[in-house]
Length: 311
Ligand code: RI2
Image (cartoon, rainbow, N blue to C red; front, side, top):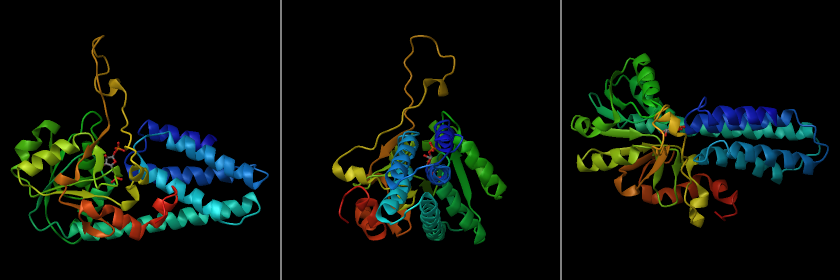
């Protein structure tokens, strides 16, 4: 399981960051791992896929996009006829390629749709680093729209700096603020755009810690709060009543040489309730969080079917 263990380590250490990059890295690791397989039967090969999938699932908790992607590949492999590992590998490569292609199409649609919400002179606030948000901003720039972005640092790991650097490279006027300055700067903002790590069956979203506080403040300041995300981040297990697990990371990320006896909590994500979300900018358009389940059922019935829910 060398390749899969290596990928899981990179994901756990945040050398690969953002829900989308995590999912794409996991898909490639699974396909590459199976290329090295010495399985002699269908059962042995399927057992290897299960083992690889579980290692990757365990890398980070709050990653339904990755889980959906790996489940999709496994589901297609189980449903197909193949006799040898060579045939299996061809099939896995085909299925993975098809999945990535469909993801790219979804992303492109999101960028087109989201960029129309950005008008000349719009001031946008964003939190953390989301490739989906950056994609929307890049698409707006390509259309020749001039706008400004305020980005938070995003403690404790400062992913806001990645956002700031990418925006500067794009030639966008960018301002960085500390996380606790959000309410002050909301007065100057027209729109909040954040990414998502997970979407629940009730239309709540889970994103980087701090997101919910921004959503609350945005409502109070009457600033529209939008989430930019593929529906591929929908967690089907939430239909069954499961809560999305929230990853809690090491205390040392917050204070490496903290005094002994001090309790430090470091949840990486939190839930933002649908009541605070104006719209979800996704491959189905700008939709209400209330219609998430219907949208997923229409576009990706396999997300439900792959966990035994009839779509
Ligand atoms: P994209 C990130 O989490 C942020 O919470 C970001 O909003 C989300 O993933 C989605 O990112 P982390 O992996 O899929 O940095 O839009 O902990 O790239």
